[in-house]
Length: 196
Image 1 (cartoon, rainbow, N blue to C red):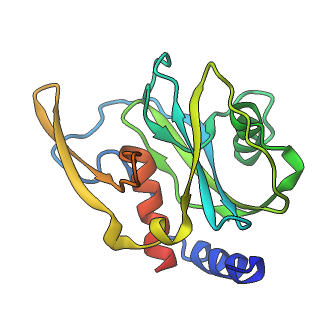
Image 2: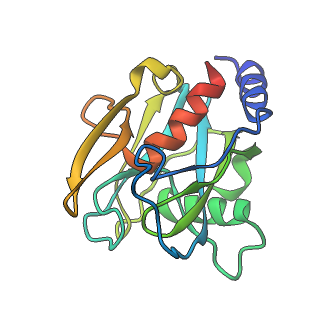
């Protein structure tokens, strides 16, 4: 897709303010009690040269969400002036994304995680290509998924598994060998609804 067309399509999708989402959306009987919400941000990076979105597989050694598929991102540090700065800094650290090559177009509504993060998805288009380089302590793999796959709501499904004795449902959007689920799939599903 040509960059101006992609940009126009994304800007249009972001103009729909929508509402916040959470890991509890599909589990109304399970609600957080006094869950602290730590501000965090992730980068939904569109790579027009390949018509893809960049994702990572988290290291199995991490405390939170080990081995899961995620956007580059993390909690907002005191040195970050904004959530956008946090997302860009984390993407630079995790995948070697140069700070000056992202055209930030806006953000999606926040997503509350079961682990206590209030995540703001920052959306941007890369203005130049780059060679991804993973931060080995946090990222085991960097991969990309076609925009067409992620923008199609019919590729998403609701699945479930037992956790702490209760069935928990969640969104999933598998792609090849990658099982994209949970918060990442929920954020992508919200974006797919806007893009379709």
